[in-house]
Length: 187
Image 1 (cartoon, rainbow, N blue to C red):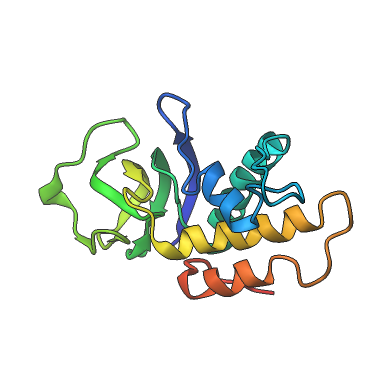
Image 2: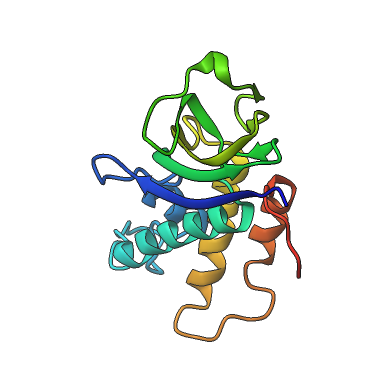
């Protein structure tokens, strides 16, 4: 029996500093938190929830990544895979080129394999043993749907913070993300 399977994926953010697709100010504007205070003549800084909102932005981005099966924030990936039947899909979106190595960590010459596609590539060439793919994945420029999904998620979670989320929480974010899904749902 021929097997196509991703065995392991290791992520590396490089410097460890992640720039989220949505800024704190964008989220605060979306939540309408600036100038909050009741007296229209007095502008107040609304900064006491900044740490909470920042953590919600990260949580929302991670939720979008899991829900869609896409890497949003750029990072280096090391993907160990079996491609015995050919046409395995690599996680993406892919930025730049992919370097494949065999089980002995020898680089496989680009003339010895075929890839279909660039942003969402499939490795067409079959290999009997495991191989490793090293490449950058994520978006260099974030699509608008990413920002909208994150803001919708943050709004639901901010509004119901400290309470149980209602059953419809995340539904707006899910509606935005659903057309972008790269994963198969068996549920």
